[in-house]
Image 1 (cartoon, helix red, strand yellow):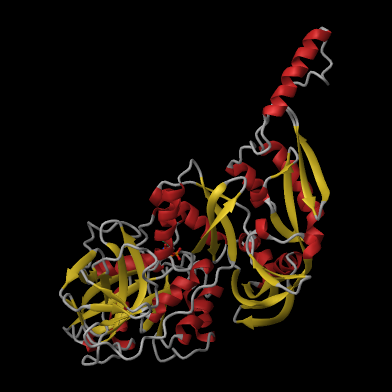
Image 2: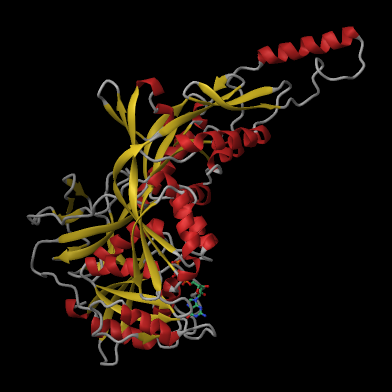
Length: 596
Ligand code: GTP
């Protein structure tokens, strides 16, 4: 396709404003998929996406559109996730696009994620087309939504504000025309050496790594011998093609086009998203700037259930390839054996990865309590970065500890402002600034990342009935008064249950923890003292009750010899019980996970 007839665009919006539904309609109206083929949410094909009703991975699809001028255009559509934990996916999609449809739900109006994604799009130099969705709904407030969009006061005032129902298809034809009229064709040089951006990748069990590429300059043909510039790696180049939406082989991808390249690489670590692909024979002089790597905010241990370490390793490697914001490294726990320390953008991201392991690889993992990376300054003047509580230094060796803080922007309506501020307060938030954003109020907080890593987002959603939103960016490290909590069961430390908390929260949290453990640790024939230890002192203790009545304490009438026999049996049982034989089920870990 001639470059002037290509449009690469993304759809961005607040969560649930209808991106995937609009993508489905566009595919239907351009006959990319027939109505018969089309089932709701065609692009959200991961099981986790259907279960949660949200998009987790960005998708790409090529559509051919015959415009009112009678000419055919190639529309490469990139569907993006809306949840705050996946904004990294959004920025990758935007780097491959020239325009963005900003979709706003008329029943909800402009929301914080609308504003955040709009900022991202403008930062990437994209042309933005605002579209109001769900105008068919009885609750739609179209005019008010239009006013809110106008109040955003950004550079898209030269484009119309379209009004549609992605559900019924009403007005979608005008969107298709506007894409051609308002979005620019890609800029790129046909004659220059090949330069292609890898903006995403997936692992296919038969084909190996498949790179999603945008041709920035030149042409990629099925015969081009290609080079991955980051590691100077030559590829045999097996197949190229496009997303229709299934992978469909083609002879060439031309300047401006979006498509895929089957690399033939089997090692999931061999390709990084953001890399540049060029030709081996006539390479380009300079690689593209690529992406800033995503920074993991939350870490947790993943351990295999039932000795499936190797399977878990393979699955994790493949997921990391598919999701470049997910990081991992091998680790070992005394209680659980070999496993992985995994890094996530947030807790929802952690949950999604766990579910993907279950759905796509049939693997269940034990997950330890999540934590952030602490900067620990030792009395020896050494500094350690610690993201695993097991490795947290002995308290007497520590001079001071720093923890990561984030700049958080909470956008909320006036009605729940008091509750929201109270929530931020109870999570050690410092209010920095407050501003009006149309009808909404924007609160700027400085918050320890450890305080937002757990359930802050859910709590915010719940007190604001789903309306308030949260955007966070890493700010810096600052002093934190934190301590390590160790859990002893039957006088042996269970390392994998350790976690780090703010000192002031330790007494209440440890008490809550032992109470929970009392009901989750599997009972034995004898009582098991369970203690939460902080800096060598026992902060809280319970006894996990025994399975059977204890001969020594029960008041039943028995003959002395029978009692003695029972006592003997119990003491043998006690001795036989190795200290580490506490079975660690996910329930036991949940006792820690659910603490905050
Ligand atoms: P995420 O992928 O989770 O960010 O959501 P999304 O923006 O892709 O939204 P999705 O397309 O999944 O739509 C969310 C909900 O809104 C679904 O229940 C849709 O059926 C509904 N919906 C989408 N468009 C319309 C519309 O035009 N009118 C009405 N009434 N409902 C719509």
